[in-house]
Amino acid sequence: MEKTDEPRWLVVRDRMSRALEYRMLPGGSDLRAAITAKHAQLAKTGWRVDSIPRKGAFFFADRDNDRVCVSVECFEPEVADARRLRR
Image 1: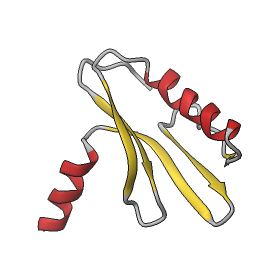
Image 2: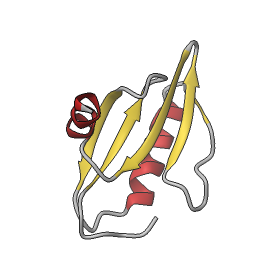
Image 3: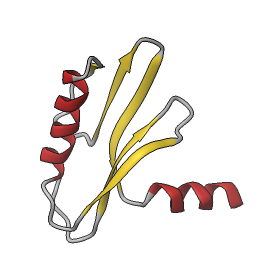
């Protein structure tokens, strides 16, 4: 993941691609460190986490019957989801 001057969002989405949680990563943030920290946090709290692809910006995690996708995204989720609904 390359650094950028633009903000990015660390997003956790459910099976239906609904944003469950997200936080803004300011421009210049270490995106790999942010997603790696979320990976470690989920693993520590009992989630089974897939590996993060070397050149990817996402991973999947599951626990019991829950499955989520954690990713670094270019757009704020609420704005992007609202835009998708208007189409």
